[in-house]
Length: 440
View 1 (cartoon, rainbow, N blue to C red):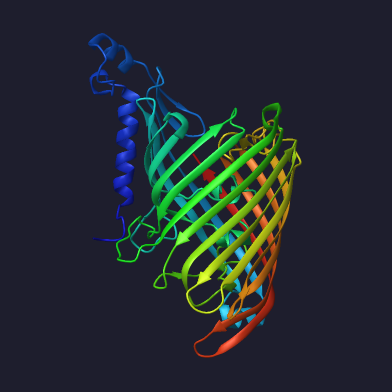
View 2 (view 1 turned 45 degrees about the vertical axis):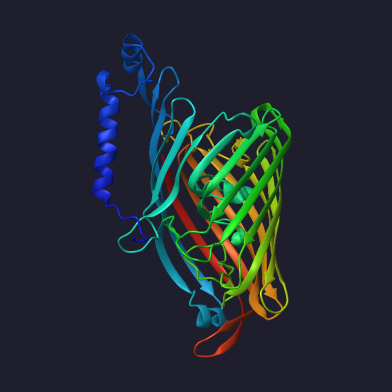
């Protein structure tokens, strides 16, 4: 079986155009209706479709039984990196570059009120002729105390920063501490917001897969991951919020399954400055995260502490950790959009959209973050890396923004295991980067 999901861009364009054409025409005898509906009800429901724009293309049936959306995102990055000679010689990160950081299309929706799905593909950073799966799942809502169950390829429920979409991050990249966060894998996830959505629990069982959601091996890499979120304060439609969260992931491994941690200095065009290098034979591993976020009008703070406990197969058990803290402020008076019941941040709507004719310039946000990751323990010398990132965000429209980041990072006590030689690497780097982003 081919481990890559192949799909051409022209084919996807044809699919999207067909969906758009069919929805706009709303042909009665081709619309999807409940199987137990009478002919008269079926005809009426088939005629009551609305196709409209709401920061994305949406197609809803008026009775609410069917709600569909399709769209995508484009993130184009430029960066210039000035690294110390020692880092450049060992890791090759000094220069200027550009990339399409993300290029995705998606189609999601709800059918028969409770059956939902999401289909999302990534075209950027996937290889010369392949695409990768992102979210590819189906599920059911309203399952009593269980709440919602989803099955497929999706994010494991772990950390505020990881759960928040890249569309809505304050900075261009997630923090150094995100090195310990699980990626998307195939599994089954259950979650339910309770107590007026002030408390959210999420738990899932996953198997590690490749970016195409494929895994087939005698030795399995399973993990149980869960997250608990409490919101003791939520006032004035999210102008004042206090978010508390805790995530835990246990990975069932054996000595034939390896673990490796690595991290870039908060710039995707840079190389991995901190890296455990060789993979670590491990029986199992536990990762813990505690998180805090506060929104108080235009000001917000956010931070978390990550710790990985590795039960090594041979030698000493290993501990690695990381943390970050950030502060942001909207100069134009907006506030971050906290999604109550989902435990993450969402889309920001500027008070005034960019319009030169009226003198409106959208929303402006300033932010600063300190982050640290320690990948040194026992004989593993992955390095200690810290960074200070200053950010300026310009939100022209609810779905378009420009983000500028300046990153100063420092690497210490990293050992690079050749070839041709083994060397210790220390040094600082300065990175200026900018992103142009559109999502719909």
